[in-house]
Length: 66
Image (cartoon, rainbow, N blue to C red; front, side):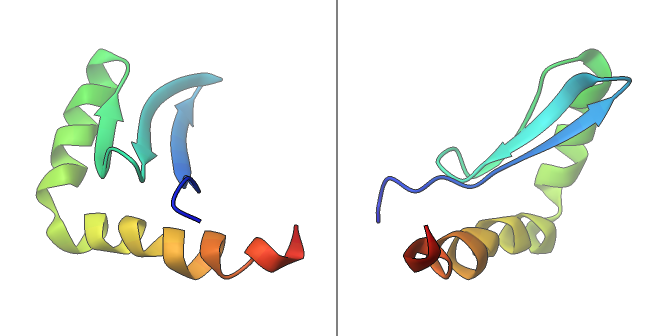
């Protein structure tokens, strides 16, 4: 169960601009705009806590279904 990973990506015009990875624990930007957005989102501790909690509530909860 420890190797389960939650990944949430943000796209604009079919280009990935930023991604939240539960193993990293924060957003990482892939474009100039994505880096700015990732920094903004990473400063919001409640938003990051929500994304981190998604791993437990979504991934671990549904592990028996797969």
